[in-house]
Length: 208
Image (cartoon, rainbow, N blue to C red; front, top):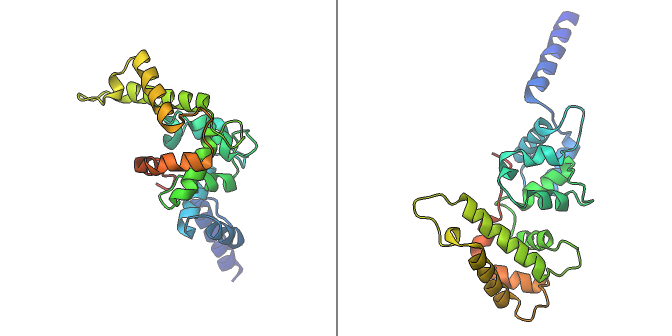
């Protein structure tokens, strides 16, 4: 009988090792109640989180996160990590990792995405996005298109020179902030509501 119990215990340990790290039932309940994810999806995120963590660590570093596919080509990756770490360190615990994955998931409501998008551009946390920040981000986005659009029929933006990019940015700023006051959240929300593609593109899949 003792030999049978030892064999059963050994088999259980092997099964747990094969399955990788697992959350307790209590923790699983917490994350399913406080995120947009099912228990299966939380388990996938937990396994992925620990696969990325350095041995002996229970946080993801800036280096860990910016090397994964979802972040690799994202020019806003450093700011995203700074924002979701909350203390600005760029280090994410599992809870903060779930929060970030949830905001960028397809399950996240548009309003949630808009709130976090506003926070992403509100660098100084004063609840106003200044024209300088808007201009820098617009230029960064256009530059990214210019660098990555190598198709035989590139988009119009991909063919712009530096002076033309400045002109596009100036016109966009004039349209969305004609008085140069900067954008509060209500203003920002109105702009995004005219840009349905933005919400669709504010997406990264950490479950796959």
